[in-house]
Image 1 (spheres, rainbow, N blue to C red):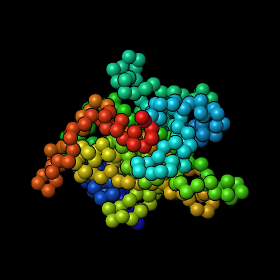
Image 2 (cartoon, rainbow, N blue to C red; image 1 turned 90 degrees about the vertical axis):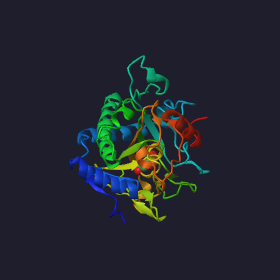
Image 3 (cartoon, rainbow, N blue to C red; image 1 turned 45 degrees about the vertical axis):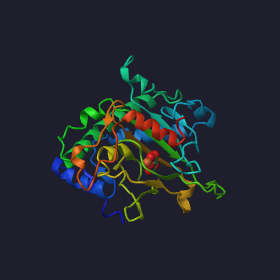
Image 4 (cartoon, rainbow, N blue to C red; image 1 turned 90 degrees about the horizontal axis):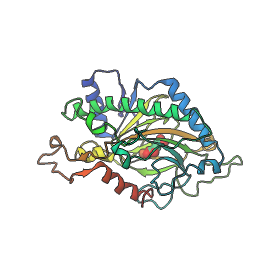
Length: 314
Ligand SMILES: O=C(O)CCC(=O)C(=O)O
Ligand SMILES: [Fe+2]
């Protein structure tokens, strides 16, 4: 059933990308992107670092949990985040890397400083580089989206320059322990949710589990080849396009069999607009059949509204 989600090489000409990605995002809110330019060795190193971090003792990890910060930086413990409208928390723990700003930057009020695990000396350099590479790949994808929407190819550049993007290292521990006893307690790895941000670029989703909810109400697995990105539209881009590009509900289901004794790791990059970018419906996306549904709202205010809904801010 994944046949219709576009699998696109980012080396194709911009017009082709615009067409293929545009269709896939309109129908599914998702596409799979290969040849994205993010260095393979860097990805492998980042995956090793992520595993090494989550293998640290619980106490050490909790030392990087910043209470009251909205989970914006550092560590968020297992079973903290919950999706909008859910009663149970997700079966995951994660680490957030944000943009490293020069000291005194006016955007500091929106973007807290990063923290880094002292136990892993190469962690900072690895994830600062990966963050920069995600930024670059994201711009190419946004360029194709701009062309699809009838905008100039560089239309998004200024909107995401110094964007409040977050790189998330995710760990979903095994669902069963060594004795085969299940410990999911009725919860799932990631309950159905839409992403808050502009677009999401996800590495590491080749380990099964990620599914999107189609317009026909079916759950469709998203299965990128190793190294490829699963890319999806977030709520901020949906809002900007008056829902022409769909922020699609997705989830990560608990595996059966052998996979239930394994961890799953993934690395989504939540690409955000600049905090002071005002999300105001594109005139290209409004007509008699599609009246404007949204008031202008700054990307920061939108984010704060949504973080309160998912238990990460007060
Ligand atoms: O781990 C995955 O494959 C997806 C994670 C996700 O959807 C999220 O963190 O928003
Ligand atoms: Fe998500």
